Structure formats: C-alpha cells, structure tokens
Image 1: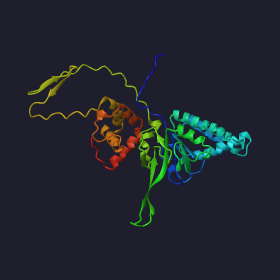
Image 2: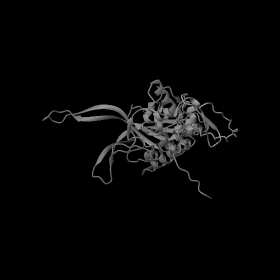
Image 3: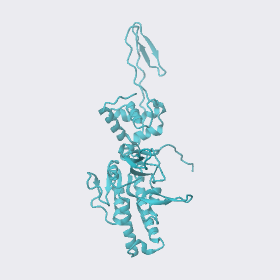
Image 4: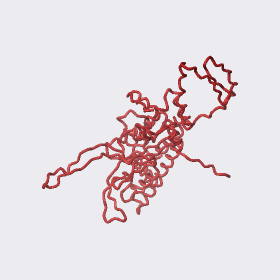
Length: 373
C-alpha cells in the first residue's frame, strides 16, 4: 500500500500547562482561553464569571468520569483543570484507598509514588483523547522552589518547578511536562541593583515587578513550547491568542462546485474613435476614445493561496489588507512583506483562527488604525 504523505501545519487542539507563583493570575489567564469550562478542584475560580462543573469532582474516579463526559458532550472549546496539584491529591487518596494504606509512603521504596504516577497517566491519556477530539486542555498548577543539582556541576542551586509529588520522588511532574505542548511559567520580573554609593557596603534593592510568561527552559525554571513563542512575553491573553484558536470555529474549506458552462461572449460594437481588444476566450473589450474617462481599475487580485481567506473576508465585509495589518500587528510579518510571500500554511492558520482575526480587525477599526495595504 502506498504511503499517504502530507506536509504543512496541522491545526489541532493544544495541551497546555500553566504554572506560577501564588496570585500571579493563572486562573484569570485560563478564563480567556476559547470558551473554557473549569473543573475547579481547588475552588480558585469562585470569584470569576466562568462556566464550571458543579459540583466539582471530589474523588479521582469522579474526575476521570467528568473528562469522559466532556469528550462525549463537547460543551466547551477548552477544558481547564484548576489545579493539577489538587488533582494529584485525589489521585493519591484513590491509590491509598485502593491499596488499603493510610499513606503513600506505607508501600516503601517509592513503590507508592510509582503506582500514583501510573494512575495519573490514566488522566493524561483521557486528556490526550480530549485534545484529539478538538478541545484544548489547560492544566493549571502551583510552583515551588526546589534545590537542583546538575550531574556535571559541583554545586546545587534553587529553581522553580511544578508543585507535583515530593522533591525526592518526582514521578508525576516529568510525565506532565512531556505530555504538554507548552509548559508556561508565570512570574514577576524584577531587577535587583546595587544602590550603594561609592565606598559604601553593597546595598541591594529590587524594582520592577512586571508580570511575564516564560516559554523556554532556563536554569531557574521549567518551561517549553512547540509554537515558536518568544522566550518571554507579557502576561496577557494576546501573547497566547495566535496559538490557541477556537477549534470549533475552524471549519474545513468547502469544496469548490464545478464551474457552470459559460455562455458565448456577447458581441460588442465600437463607437467613433473606440477600439476593440479581444481576449483568449473570444470576448471583446472596448477601449475609450481619446478624451473619454477610462473605466475604474479592477480590484487588486491576491495570489491563489489567499483564496480561502479572501472568501472569508468577502462573506463578512473584511479585506485581505486588514488581515495583513493584523499579521503585522502580531509581529508575524513585517509591513513590507508582499501578499505573495505569505505561506499557504500561515493562511491556513488564519482561516482556522478566523474569529480571533476578526476581533483584531474590529479593534483596529474601532481605534481607527490605518491599514497600510
């Protein structure tokens, strides 16, 4: 059987881990994901107007059943589990109850943690199935500072990590990091400087405190992403929006109906001083006589790869030039990038994320921003 080989970006739902220090805004950020539904195991979303499973699962089996029901009923575009470390508590209680143990330590030799990691893997498998069904998954988690020692270094140092499992039995945290398409660390960016005058003992002072998203690995924290996201971004939904489109709005292009047979071109007649130019299909165009106003020029024609986006624009009163302006505003392309240089993969992403692009265009119109195209 011959191989079916394709290439290009494949739009699909994403699996995201968002963790950070207390009060940084993890839940607030997740509430801006496409059409989110919260499984609030911790109760951290009570102050927000969001959709949530009520009552929240109070047992491990209830949590797994909730994920199955979300996949079957598809009531949302994003499932948010707030938080993963509280879900781990339910997992631990389940494993201990099933094994008749009072504590996960009672098995000895780390066996209890291995069993707990295997059980937590069931949840990750179900969440993967949810993503394959077109629903984004966001796991929120707390962070903690742990001592870390590189095998090839002489000393240890502190770093931020997911608050999952014990420091000496890190079984679940690696599973979660491998499972995710993006692990995003939220923190305050502070600058420490020496404010002592010449000759004085060093006096350090912190300033700043800007909230940021870290999306790449650093000696001081865990982070990663498969999207090409900048290593550091402002803590705002706009930093993530291009990578998390609403998958329910990403309808595949409708097939192009066969072209209806065209009637023979109508005969044309030239007036005094006019000339007729015939095209390859036999149709004729009358050129104006000297002194007559010329016909208005035809609208700009975009390259063939723009056809799907052009159809979306035309059906809802937008223009391809406004789409290009949004791409420039999001730093995806520069203002001097011509339309023919936009790759087909990116324009497919535009079509899949069309509701978000419309929001950006509407905002530009409201702000009266000029469109440079």
